[in-house]
Figure 1 (cartoon, rainbow, N blue to C red):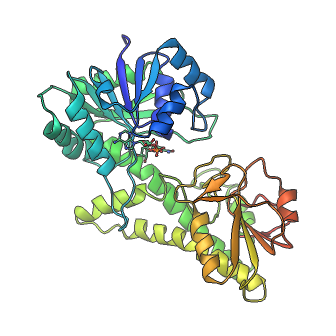
Figure 2 (cartoon, rainbow, N blue to C red; figure 1 turned 90 degrees about the horizontal axis):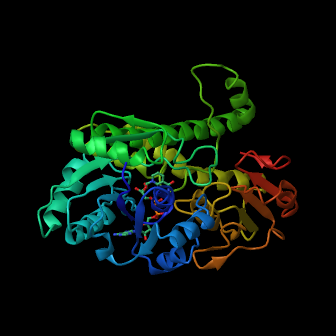
Length: 404
Ligand SMILES: NC(=O)c1ccc[n+]([C@@H]2O[C@H](COP(=O)([O-])OP(=O)(O)OC[C@H]3O[C@@H](n4cnc5c(N)ncnc54)[C@H](O)[C@@H]3O)[C@@H](O)[C@H]2O)c1
């Protein structure tokens, strides 16, 4: 493909990752509303795990990438990639307000036709029934834009799978959009999977994370059943995992976190309901995972004479997964609330996150009770075991602790 002028809207986990790969082959402007992130990026500093500052610095110095808060900088781009948050609102319903604001920015600033690709996760029909009409509504001039979807599958912090070798789904609203999308991604992705419509790609993305949410809930329920029966859940799972077909092992945990697994299934449940199907299974899985922190707090209280009132409880690891600083939707938050509700004095320790909700990470010592939500590689099991006389481990990684 000839070198394109690409605007990547949103320079977070997804957008910056795409920018880093795309700028090796194209001219990229990374647009974001956050001036702090933009300034940092233009100084060659990445704020995202898995995106090396050296790559950003090199791209900035070579002139193939710059970040901007100025929406007019996207004018004249022939490819626009949308990578902004698609969270839930207070009623746990899809919140497309970020997408809407991007459609306005695109509509108001484009000066010619472009291929507009959505990478943000949303329900089937978002590209066709929401993004295209919104951009057309906001456009001052009528351009013949092409529209496509290519949902992102990046797993922050993961090294074995990246943009190059992770299979990427894609589909355009028209055959031309599909071809152009393939040409664009083929410059930096080796494994492209074309599907017959944008709705298939959108639904597949939601189902991938719903599959994880449901299976994690199932194994969390098994953890509760196993404890009640006096059986070790992890040994049971290891045993079941010896079956070479028809079984996939998931691990029990304090719940699910991040921007995807706790959120995407609710997008699927919502669109299902609007289509007249009640997604009871998906909703129940969400409830089971959201209830895990309460269950864990109850177990800890039971093991400690029936109460944690007045006890110093240290929550170890508040990132939603190991070796990243991302605390979005972390189950640690619900666990802290549950322990507070039982009267505990709760603090948290996480050297990767360092500061969270305006407070700083506490030292990993001096607690009555420690409870491990996430174990980063830089925190040793020995340190955790020394931090309190009673340690409850939800991760299965701290030998010698009381296990979920
Ligand atoms: N994080 C992941 O692992 C992951 C994986 C696959 C898919 N996704 C999906 O990708 C999308 C983006 O997620 P993310 O994790 O990159 O989010 P993020 O919060 O890390 O980054 C989003 C960025 O968009 C910026 N932004 C918000 N509104 C904007 C606007 N109107 N114009 C320009 N910039 C704007 C924010 O300042 C932020 O820097 C979501 O739909 C998410 O579900 C995320």
